[in-house]
Image (cartoon, rainbow, N blue to C red; front, side, top):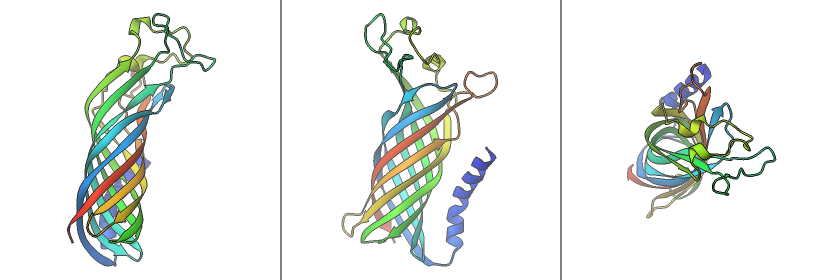
Length: 244
């Protein structure tokens, strides 16, 4: 965990470090929006077998470009997003076949959707054409999540689930509400931007988020030792330079 705090400190202090370098000064503020799709799992200990859960994400983006240092365009970027996270259980028997509910005769399904306001703060480094043309970029930095609400979707009654055929018997999470309302972690992404004179900047990005916090308590008296997010995010965005 000490290493994680050091990484967070490095990402937060990066814009100051960059600004202190000697390069071509920039003063460009770009505002816009983004939308995307999340593929999420939660690392439960003890393990809960899952497949990736899909969810939408959209919000507001602000980027401030501070400097061009040799071929590197250095910026800071912040977002405020509404994001659907959670998990989807892959309920299988020891032969890797779907578990059939004895009451309904269909394969058992369970998923949880957890909605957040997510606020990532990135060091944004780009290489290529700054104003007209294509550049490639890297985003990296801390992300904060503020819990909004959650919902459950399943096709079986809790007291009539088929536990005798399940290979994975961990089910405590199915009836536990999120305990820790603040989520935090580190996100990093690779992307491409098309900058145009009249239409603004268009971006596409693949991003990964690693949660450092747990949604449930992780003390010795708690059921789960870990319950942190891992998410792949595919995002598109649009930005307009409002100040240069």
